[in-house]
Length: 462
Image 1 (cartoon, rainbow, N blue to C red):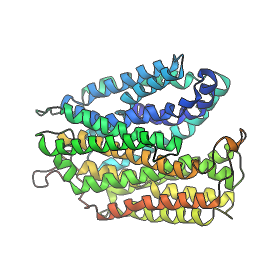
Image 2 (image 1 turned 120 degrees about the vertical axis):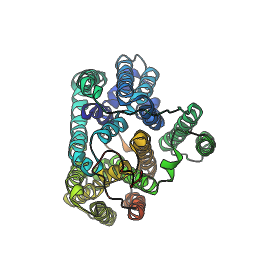
Image 3 (image 1 turned 90 degrees about the vertical axis):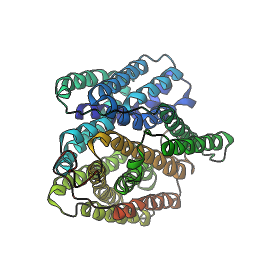
Image 4 (image 1 turned 90 degrees about the horizontal axis):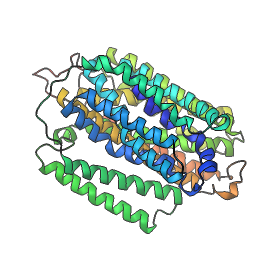
């Protein structure tokens, strides 16, 4: 399952270095941002659908479908003769990739009791650390010295190895089916609402014109679809996301905390290279060190928390302390935008990552601990869905603040344009506001972590 998760994690980092060579090869550079956006739109939209399908049909067949669709999309991308073909291939990739992370976490929930589940944060963090370091390096080598299509061809051997490794063990995965009905209209509405919202965010971020008719029209249509989905959830006997899952305070507040944490972290990855280059005067290679240290901090924070959670009665404590540390680090970055040194920026970025890392294992374990096994897929899918939405909002908001403040053709081909210190200060303050997740986590009920897969009859599901 970690190998399958690596497919999704690597795809988020290996493509970026190849975007410029792709533009030179295929032309139609106005569509370059959609190489990223097309995947993000479809992957986010289908995530909750995969969770429900896994609860109905079992984990193994749905995981195989997810990986197969992802690999098919990778082949289409690698063979793309035009930019529009490539964008379509990326959208198909997203249809498969949207299930990989959620399904991997669901399978872990099937096998490991919540009290021990956080221990696997170290292995999960290692996957993301590998992807965050190896992805840009491998993608850069492929794009610069070989051919950009290799960033997509590399998915085939990894995906085939994942299918081969999962085939036998997943046959023995415990699964106790219950009568379920797939809410097809609800699935269509949630895919429509998410896709339209993501399209509005992508168009607004790329153009900087948030009040444009097409952006407002897409946003309005997304709100209508979301309202219809909310009505469907209340009226249908077995909605795509069970009402008891949505009403569960642990799930609602834990998922919100994870979404806000992902929004701040992923959003900062889009502006930190620009910040280090324009305010500290370093090149793109040294600017990448900031991202690596921030990611390393998050991995260490998650791994240490994962080891500590089974031993702690108040298992929220590491994440609450971590959020306080992340707020302090962001405040330090905001105060030092004019006179801070490169080394100070690197230290603060590491501390921010160290503080934000604990929220992910604590949030995931708390959510999965709050549901019965037959709703595990739906709850984990909802968690992954909100995490993706949070990341999308973080990228859109922080990207609009910084990338819409003078980064354009005037920046020249050798580096970004100079951005005023106040712009970065505003971005860091916006990231601090995103840590409203601290309040959500503080208010989340702290249920004792089960040492069994299913809740005991006296406990109930959360």
